[in-house]
Length: 299
Image (cartoon, rainbow, N blue to C red; front, side, top):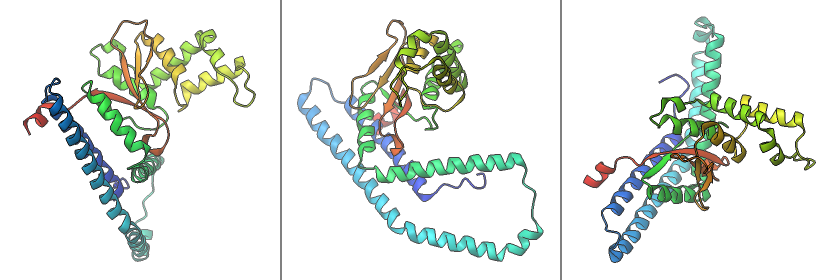
């Protein structure tokens, strides 16, 4: 493991909980598959059993988070004291063995620190939202996707999530000609919007004045789509359906599925749109086939 990327107890617990949730969803799907659809009595019992399993797991996670939080302050103080002691004891030796850090190493360290901070914020949000909207949204989405033999495939929340989710969906297809990375998708989206300005410009307005974007404002918008981590939405999805000539469906927990590009008769790209992801705002994820069906059926 690289130095400086040690996971905190909160992050480890969050990872454990995510795995347990995925395992439970796989088990639930196996239980559903084992009951005939026309057996109404058994289906009703199954619903109650599933609700109990989910409630028990949620209660278990809450208790584990409470135990972790109750000792967190003490552990932080111990870690700080330990670091200060190491600094004092190793001060002279550090001065003798000081090594010049390269610019490349500094960049790697900075990137690792940023990723560490992002993971810490996600872990903190997991604790705060265990019984909040994010947790409930995740349960509803998992149940909705399981009906289609699908599960969420998590995408990093770095501002590029919509494009990375589409990149992942294209990678799951057998057609190598459709594969594009995030940067290519952003570039193709921006180029298409520029060349079809009349289709997109009327839907963009200045938030301060309410007026439709000027030509210069529209060009800046397209440049941001191409070169920055500007968040993608329905306009960009519409452009991408036309670029890829593929339909896109966006599944949400509490709303009907949004379908874009229905004029294209192909297997759709499937995305999951989350309103409360990680407590950090709205977010797109990809999907994949539900895993471990055979294992759960044997257990």
